[in-house]
Image 1: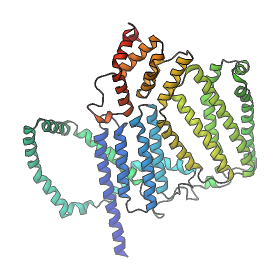
Image 2: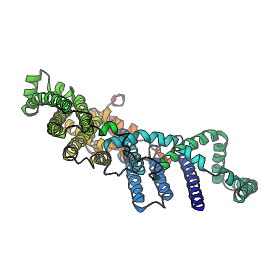
Image 3: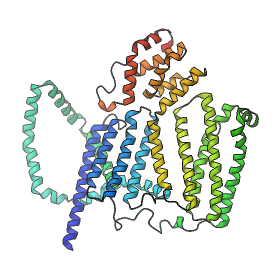
Image 4: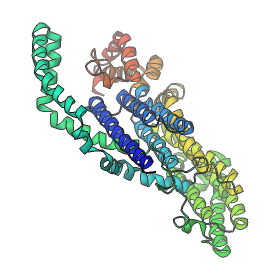
Length: 511
């Protein structure tokens, strides 16, 4: 029995050592990949791929199902990072980070013993709050398990140190000789020497910080035994406030009945706007169509989100379901109509002022929210809560990845160009140029259809942004982006044509 316990202890100590060494390797990789330019680009995809590979290696002795889970979430996170490689829209960076957070949270949730399909919304929220704590403090238990004394006294460690001391002078001599023999080698050696002399403290700090974070992320991937940690959502005491009957029949009826009455009044008022057209809007609301569209869109979106949250809280309180469910169904139907009203306002506003990235993102969010309201009705309101929370997370991840794949910037550019060319609407070329490289192909495709002065302005903006002979990734591959490269090639190929358009108007370059 004692021998078995000793073997288990040694295995855990070795696992801790391997985890810390792997995290140190990720820290060094992070320093090489992220230093001076940040993580947003192909370097993040490489680092996430390394993290996934190391996670799989550290869990190679785990059961096959857990390894499949790790591969699934690692692959999803890696796929999300590719958005920043193939798209140049800054708006997508935050959405990509949301996917990475959701993937990490899902791994930690399952590592603590919760079945993914059976997880509740409260489990995800609780794990989401635990996640940063785990990342920041996960290294501390590992440090206490590393057998430093044994390592320092081992003959192998002493031999490694002696070998390094002996070979260092030889390496310096050979580096000097190779530098004298070859100018390219001398340049790399000189750069390495500058790195050691000037930036060493900064590099060490970056390595330590990234290693610390990587250690916390790696500890999130280790499955915990029932005796080591409490499964998320498994504690009756912790969930007592949710599992007890917190709301009586009277409270449930008053809360739900009041909300339903208020929402029905609002929906009835909105019905005339939804089906009456622009004339009804102007006659009834006293506003122009544009004013009506501008007013209340984000408020309606907030109402929809808040309503779903309230329904989840009341449902979790184990109220009288015979009172709650029919009223909740009416409330969900009202919210879907409110989302339809919000979509109508957004459509009217787009017709009047054009499409923007924020409006495209809002549409994607509304579709996601509507789908999950229907899912709530089909699962939670039928007493089958399993799958709703997981569907909420998976549909969110899928929506973000699909949004990035759909190239929303190009959609915005095409819609605004269509309005200007076909309908004679004013076009904001400065805004289109600010969208980045993804907007370049649609602009070039329909450039000749714009009025001559707008052609001049668009050509001037394209040449300024993408017409340089040298690319920013020429000296640093980490700055490469597929959309940026395609835009640079497209503008370069038509450089003479664009230059001629700029020359048509003296004051074009001043716009």
